[in-house]
Length: 138
Ligand code: THU
Image (cartoon, rainbow, N blue to C red; front, side, top):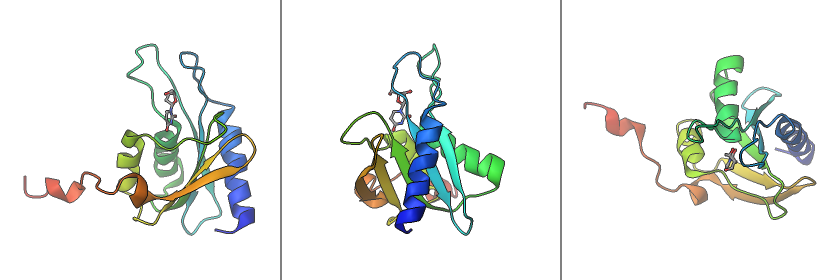
């Protein structure tokens, strides 16, 4: 992805962050997931619940949104935005969910309110996901 595309991803993530429903943590998160072969960044924001456990992170919402609303299951990159200056990274639940749809070299970008501050490849964050093929033949 080029700089212009990444800037667009950051814009979509910041826009989604504004829609975050996070009255319990006050920690608004925005995500933008780039669909392969489409000029489309799919947004996600965290949606919290009074049960706490019912909360879903911005990254998973973006995945579910891409699949359910855009028929997109192949992704090129994700941009994650929080208020943290040094940037945050996806939690392990979100990495596990992403692992079904992305390659080891899938880029994960972390941004603050201004700019992208970190970049990792997926396998650095979750080198050994639970493998769905383990379920075959059970
Ligand atoms: N959260 C995300 O949306 N993404 C992450 O990667 C980490 C955490 C949300 C969940 C909860 O609404 C709030 O941030 C505080 O944990």
